[in-house]
Image (cartoon, rainbow, N blue to C red):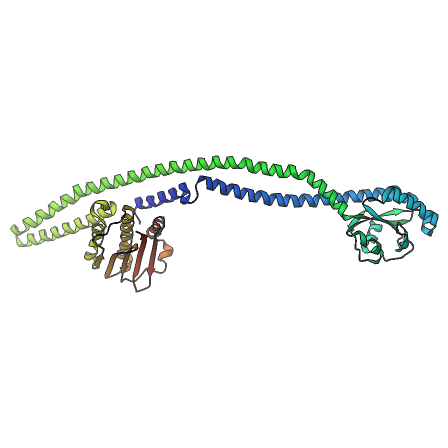
Length: 444
């Protein structure tokens, strides 16, 4: 449909669908969908936030364990590392045991070891390890060189850790210390990882309620704001619909006025001129009579063209004349163009007003395409009723050009949208040199 009022009607229908939510989703459903999507985002953010918070808290717990190990190693153990302890003197070992069990071991710390740089264990609260020699790992060697505290999950598969396997997962903290002579040794303690994880969990749980509560509050605050915004949008759409409807009514009134003026003015005047020329021609000289008859014929042709234009400007009143009469008016101008048109429609057919209008618009657009593009010699317009009502416009022309769909045929696309609004379907079939068939089908 290429006339402005039809396009405006299509736009109005689209706005009405948007305004009513397509009869499937009203304002409440739209806000509910927004709330559900916001809740999904809230859950996602909460999950990510909890994961990050837990990760940060666990890192903080490990940092705290490293600080405690540094205090224990350098503030307690380092003061008791004597040459006697390094020689394996039982009294020195017993004195270190007392210090370790009183201050360090017994809580989350399950094992303490002191290493020489060559890999010999000079002290452990597990006495069976004292005097044993194991190769230091690269991490331990790096700590002795860098002089900083490090922590890692203990590798319980290593032989020097065989006595710690019964404790399960452990966090191993190690740092360099010095003996009374100033030589470097490696202090190492083993903490239950469960206690580290519990400390981290306690830390992040103290922050989680505030963060999750803030997110939930933000979500709850957005719901009434979304409701008000949706109401404003709905009112704006209703206002635009009202203005558009007024514009359509004004456009229809103006088209009706123009059509009436043309029919009552120019068409009637030309009809009078045609009758006068036809009546006067026999009394004139032969050469003048011929000119008058040609002028009368030209006038009648102009009247037909004007009447065709009137149909385009303001279609006939379908409610008064019926669909059959309106379709006959559409196919009538095809004969002077050399196109044989046939119309098949049940005489007793009664359709709703909106269906009659849709069928008329479809036939009008299809026949316009036949005249402009098809180069057809025959066209058939038929209406069939079989559970559903179907209008078909079929021609024997050259078919639509390959790029015709890409170029637009805006009228057919708009008709397809209108057919969907009526729970129907518009189908266009075209093959080169085999004609085009336009079919629209709607429920009765």
